[in-house]
Length: 579
Image 1 (cartoon, helix red, strand yellow):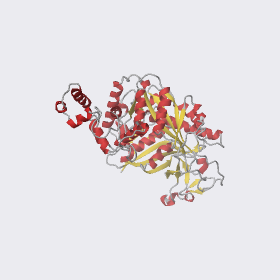
Image 2: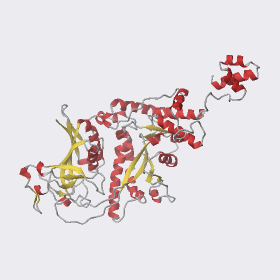
Image 3: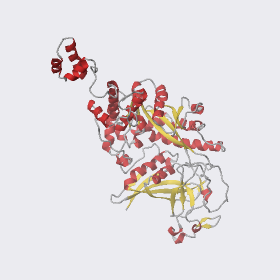
Image 4: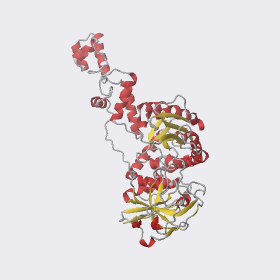
């Protein structure tokens, strides 16, 4: 029997049945002083002793439902997140509580937290495991457990045969940087390449995309960086029918932006069939209590992808995003050719982005991503041992292959990308001698590619003396020792992204390139001769040396980049081991 019912019965005995205070207190097992306060009206019958509660019983019930529902979907709520949620409820209603003098105002403390857990034994405080950002730490047991829980969740909501009600949401950042224009300088010299200073700042525009397992999608949602929402909305976002936007200070998807997307963009544009599962990553914006209530009201079930596993479980990452990024790069190049005096800004971003979106948001691309990730149809076996271990295979309709030759005792691995090219021979006019390893380094300030990589000739001391006088430019009669330690070409676009990330994350101890042929005009499937840096190319192989510990992550980065390339069919990746 609840406390309120006990006191109500005791008060009734005293008032209606004329029972004495002492006998009523003994009958109902309560203190006489406490019962006396209820009989005289000094204290409400249902009120507990001590200070008034911070939240009502109904509000606490909703919090418990939120915590338990999110936990079942793989999204744990931390103590600090619970405190902030309580504070938001109190601040919203401008409620005067015992927490009003706390700093910050209305923020609960440990005393309230312990009492909250005591009142609600169905939830408990658990250990929070720090997220592991190394994908190599994932194992079959964790993946099996996630798929088992996910399949049970989908089955419990009768969605196993309803792909149109299973959605995946992802945010993709695109940087807009001022163009540098062209510079003048001496022609046909062996000096360093010319550069022009560029603005250091970059504007990030986030595109929030959402697709379903049947291959459907809703229009993109743009998040523009701006401190205040302008009075006149950016009309260019309507380039794609149904697209819309919001503004945040950073241009990233924060809680309010995600709520705006869910309420004003996602809910109005998806089919009416319910419930709907919305697969998300671990972004803190997805944990918000008000967001959860909004989703529940519309029968939208938020479900978390496996932590640290979105690189192979996110349907977007497998096919859609690779296609989108490549199409965006092509759209940018086309815009620059057609508008040499203009820049891509917030006002025309959506117009340039339109063609990339239309090329990528195809039923085939979207459906393939769900199938390959095992999200729908649910297939745990799509995530093979090779995906989690050191032998990684690219699952792609095109012909990229990984050949592994492993010796257990050897400590270093070399990832070799064969049948590639060196770009820019028409600019640098340097033909490397056979067998000479070229060094691959970051190129800073490239306005066309954030992941640009330059190829450098070795220092003279690192070149065999017998090669010092080899002629590397017949027209200018330049020998190798004259241009040692200077740049001589570029890594192909998109492939450079994968190798760049290996360097940036300190996965690679060395990256080199070996020319496998003589300079020639660009040839299929490589870009046409009239594209930037592709008039003349040199056939070449690229090698990335990593430790066994970093092999899986490095291979994944390289293969992901290759998967986005139109030249994918000719490239072959090999992994060998060194002692």
